[in-house]
Length: 119
Image 1 (cartoon, rainbow, N blue to C red):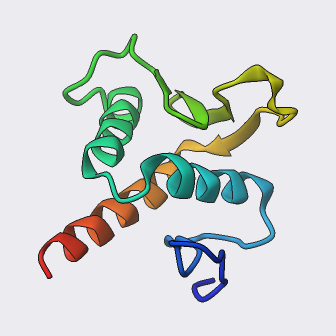
Image 2 (image 1 turned 120 degrees about the vertical axis):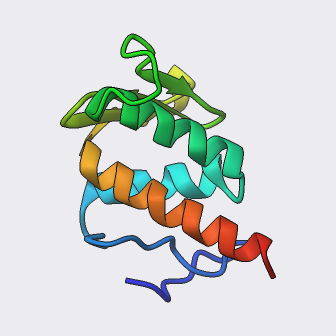
């Protein structure tokens, strides 16, 4: 649901088709978008490439299924992903999300970044 305020530099919570505000996996995807992807087209496209390599075997090495960023690491599988803290001592647990949900969020973020870049 758009319009939820995070405060700080990000005015609203990132949204994507199928996002559920009360879903723990979707909350972790949101955190990944806000903390790691931010407005970086390069980072968003790297995650998308990893997802496509696992789901469609397009243009990626099927053995490269992990991406570690500043706050989170993502292990991508064809159906399910694991998003876990990049640093073990944060107290956060690993969260499992549907690969399709992560892909939808990343695709929306890429479209938003490209839209912002053309203004």
